[in-house]
Image 1 (tube, rainbow, N blue to C red):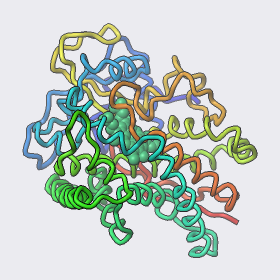
Image 2: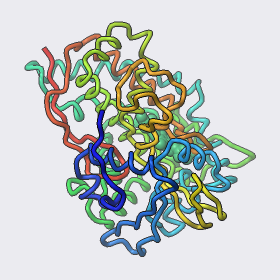
Image 3: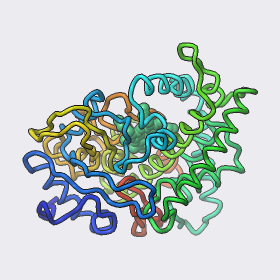
Amino acid sequence: MTLPTVPLGSFDLSDLEGFWGGPRDRREGAFKTLRDMDGLAYFEEAEFEDAPFPRGPGYWALARHDDVWAASRNPKLFCSGQGSNIGDLPQEMNEFFGSMINMDDPKHYRLRSIVSKGFTPKEIGRVEGYVHAKAARIVDRLLEKFPEGRCDFVEHVAAALPLEIICDMMGIPEEDYGKVFGWTNTILGLGDPEYATTYDELMAHSLEMFMYAQALGESRRAQPTDDITSVMMNAEVDGERLTPQEFGSFFILLVVAGNETTRNAISHGMKALTDHPDQRDLLYGDYETHARTAMDEIVRWATPVIHFRRTATEDTELSGQPIAAGQKVVLFYCSANRDERTYEDPFRFDVTRPMQPQQVGFGAGGPHFCLGANLARREMTVMFDELRRRVPTMRITGEPEYLLSSFINGIKRMECAWD
Ligand code: HEM
């Protein structure tokens, strides 16, 4: 693939409409420029229109795989406690919104140890049974509801599974699924006019979700059931348990992190399989052999989470670029996953691509590596298996309508059809 030449100075990674809303190949060209340059480029920050905090000082963009890898694996030097999104929130809001993704050790370690009890192989094994049942039900509904063989893939296939799984795991009743879906859309769609456009709306929805979760946590502490909320609320690490407030914030992180990411991986995956019929034939023809590498390739290809941020704790350097204590670095997973130095022919979608060197769609390693990576892989594997067995001719027929975001590589709508 030949990328357009996009010289430094002609693009701005903080320009939501102009850069992230612009042509995708121009974006790829810009990241190639950043990967090929000496040192690192610095970008000013975008302004949150009505946010009650000032615009931050800017950030260094990490576009190469090696730089993203190095920063991610050195949390002492590149910390998360000052925020993992680009803008600076007041400290208490960092933890309210981000929970452990915005924490450093020992706080992060304590919280992750407690909530990990809900993600042990035993717990995920229990979930597995209903991942199959849910995926089968989604396809049943699809065939029943759309006998003409045409529908929106995002709403009727990709969105349903991750949402239902996470809600079920947490013990959320079915009548509340829609509510949770709406909240997560608003929180991650900030900036896209279809969802929340204002900071106030974002706050209002987050608060609703927080209160909902707090009440759920309190009820499971008093009366445990067999869901993961009960496991987490009653787990002890060094004699300490989660407070309902901590659970409230973790819940926001979990449903947001678990829903939109997996949904977008499935949507981009179906689009990639449609655009590369040889790869689809290979995967569908011998699913057992290729599913593992194919799911990893889909996550690399899609990179559903575009970036996370770290802050330098002392004067340091990356790729020869001096970075001062307190300066921000932004880890662009989307670019690291296309680094020509790391991956052979990175713009080729290849379901047999070896899993080493590791793709960084779930993070590049270190303490914050995606807690739900195994669950997400499972969900994707089961969903594509169900589709290939029951609707093998399903393909994307419409242009994807992309989410306007510099954080989530989202598809809002995309028509599919089958014979
Ligand atoms: C394809 C789907 C997914 C993708 C691409 C994805 C991606 C990511 C990324 C990039 C990070 C940050 C890693 C880092 O900073 O090192 C992360 C963290 C996290 N993810 Fe995922 N994720 C996915 C699915 C899930 C699911 C299904 C869940 C839970 C049900 C989940 C829960 C979390 C949590 C709790 C964290 C924070 C971990 C921490 O701070 O210690 N994710 N994910």
